[in-house]
Length: 337
Image 1 (cartoon, helix red, strand yellow):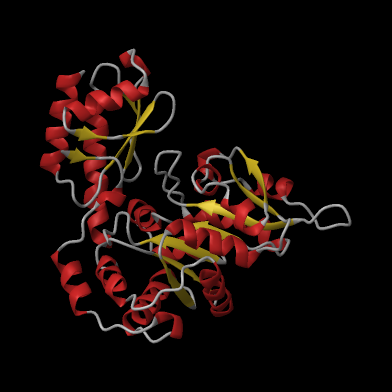
Image 2 (spheres, rainbow, N blue to C red):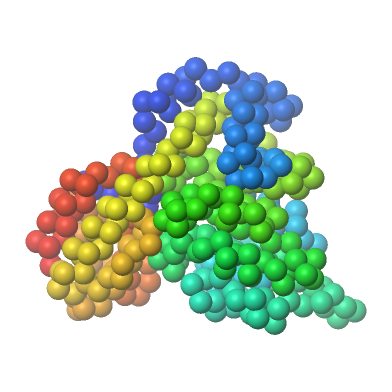
């Protein structure tokens, strides 16, 4: 079976398993786990922030950020296809009592004018805008790698109105790799960033939430509130340290996605745009089949993909998929269609 559903399906390699086995641990709620502390330090260094916090999942990291940055009833300004809108179960409303103001942003990042127009001042009648939400890479729009200039331009009007900016950077290292820029150029304009260790970087568990020391201290309290206080977490944090050394592998994943997209586009019924990172979206309406039926036919050929809309299938390359796997998957897909 060739699994192209997501880069979350990767298995920990021998280095990660050995690191988990040998990890020095302690109770992290008491801040006594040296491996977690080292991971947090190195993660903060990587994205250029004062501090970072280890969290069980990217969604928890995002939701903690929303809670820390805002006051109850405020508005969160985000692209309508952003992960926090589509895939986090309404957590901004449920956990933080936020209203979500959505904009239809080109390439998933609001323009400065869209941000300025979307900001609401606090008044007797309105709680105001509490947070601008950005995403890079942009998952639902096809793994788009957003350049640092667009991130900075969107953040500027928010900063002028003292509205904090959070970056959902689940795959921000994919963006930095695709754009050939230091990840710090992408994260510099924002107040906080979340990135996943358990996607393209290959760790089995965990994400990082980074920002100022004051932000991370409050985030630590909210993590506890959300049930994310961890004990001997070094066992799962140690693979995360190894994952931070895997950034260079992402370029290979992008090359595999390019190959997959180019060849898929030549198969009858598949319409594929060139990918920017490791996500390939295929419009399969030309097959004459419902998307679910396309997914089922792929599975019969031992290829797994994800339904990503009424006529779209998503394929995602990752470190557990070799070039040979991609070529084999293409042969199987062509045979099926």
